[in-house]
Amino acid sequence: MAEVIVKRRSPLPDWAISVSVLAIATIVLWFLLPGFFRPANIAAQIRTALPLMFLAVGQMLVVSARGIDLSLGALLALASSVMVGLFGADPALQSSLVAIPVALAVAVLGGTINGLLVARLRVQPVVATFATAFIWAGSALWVMPQPGGTVPGWLTASLRVGPWAPVLVLLIAGVFWGQFTRTSTFRKLIASGGDPIAATNSGIDTGKVQFWTYVVAGLLTGVAAILLSADIASGDPLVGASLTLPTIVAVVIGGTRLTGGNATYVGTIAGVLLLIVLRNLVFAVGLPYQWQPLIDGVLILGMLATGAGLNLWRNR
Image: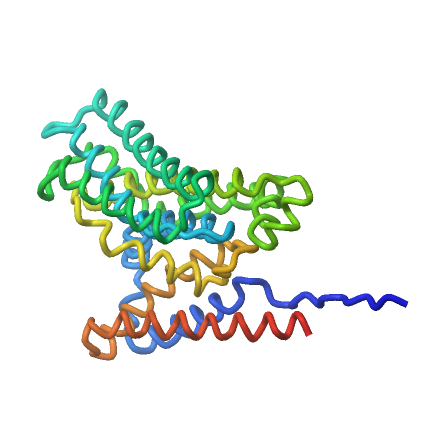
């Protein structure tokens, strides 16, 4: 008689750990730095973090299909530099109608090239995106040799309509994500990342699925570039250098496994918020800012160890 092995699902969702850690860190920050929680300051913190959140969601999609993108920050800098350069010294509505679509197109093109290299030419994701990161970064410096430029006033004001405008952006994005998780495309994404061989045997083109994750990540990078330019009201060709690694940190501590097969919007957003809270905790307790990479590393190791323990428990 054949033995049937039933895998027990964890009662905890993938985002539970990151949200729990975020709640604990927030409570600690509340006692150490109560002034941080003024509504205007919270809205400003979220507005500043919006570009990183969209980048992290793009990274999450790529990771869920067993890929990784080390070029997202550089691609953001390129798209932002192109957009601000097209705005010119005196941006008007007419230039906005050109600059914003072109910036999105540049980001999508970058994601498409990454997808072709990884999914079609079978170049290792780390190698392919590490190489394209240098290309995007060099192109950004060619387009805009130094920080500067201006953006239309309406674009900057759009994120400052009210104190909770950035939160509304996150909620709208969350609604789109919730609808996406109900589609067959999402099920194919999870199947391709979870078990590519079984997915292929089921008729799923795993290469096509992985290709589109890079394209969508490029689109989200373009959105992040627009949000970043709207926040800082200018362009900076080096602004993306410090954004790629935090996207990976946020994805991992948010509950998305680097081995693919799952994706959690709530966890990824919680991961970005946790990074913000921890950086303010570093400031609140008087530690040098240089401690932040150490804390990020400990967080990643802790989340990976916790995830490995949960997987062992699920598969017993």
